[in-house]
Image (cartoon, rainbow, N blue to C red; front, side):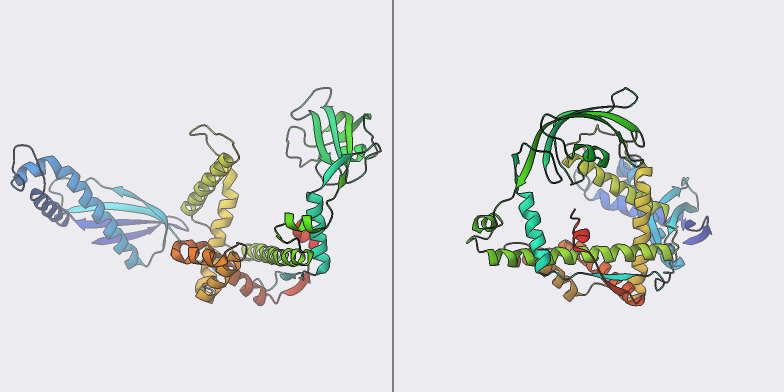
Length: 435
């Protein structure tokens, strides 16, 4: 075998490979002779089909199989000889092998993994977010849970923040209706950001059967592009104002949260345990996000186009599945533009390359005890944790996502330590997304 390597661009390579045609012919003949012992053909006894007949019927197919196997094997050998790390799938260009030709030639065009030099994160200003869950956080959470279970009672007074209003509205821009400009029986809780701020401000102070007309400006970044940045005229009628009535903090409330005997002390203990777990996950996510961004900002990486395209296809498949689960039906073959997914795909590929380099050079691989600790942590949110642990370890592939999570956490801890990150207490409501 002879091979010649050509650099086409920063990451793209071309390998021209030459193989002796005699080797191909010998292997084809060997396979055809082997086939004569097993092939069944009309008019011949098993094992008695002449080689000439077998060659006539199966020669081209066997020849293609042999050439394919030769390409696969020789490409792998050439890549190892050249010490190349192939990224994605190569594209083969096979030269026709004429009868009597002394050589079989083909070319492989492919990308290689880039050399990654991880940048310095010491000056990234990283912080280690922290939050201790105490009685105040537990009571705040219980209060939110009570509000989530509130029932609304109609009242005959002006609406205030926290009330639920039921309204009819009609909006126009320059005298014309627009998508979503009208509704009847629309319900919204004031003060929870369910409505545009300008609209909500006008509803405060209105009573049942009240009517009002006013202007509302849509934000420049409003999701509805056709109205973003424009001012609409709304005519509103309030049909009902209702105030929240929270459930009593008693045994029945505790039972509703799964505490069978209704013991409030047990309920608070369970709420605290669950809250600590959720806070821990959110703190990890916040630390991870800032570290990943710092690594991206500090490191120049040119991602292979093939890997980006593969990631785009994965994101496309995920988007289709998500839409299907939401009940959105798409016609077969409906395109999802690649440019929609490309920025996220590039980011993922770049991060993957950076993390792989850090894991290799800093020995940040997932250790068995780390994976087991994460399995135990995941299992604690189920009624029978021991069964969940058994389920994970019954099939090694089930641990892969957890192993990846451990590797990510190892990278985060390395980066925080390298940057000398200082601790920073975060706000509970902001961390939990509470309004």
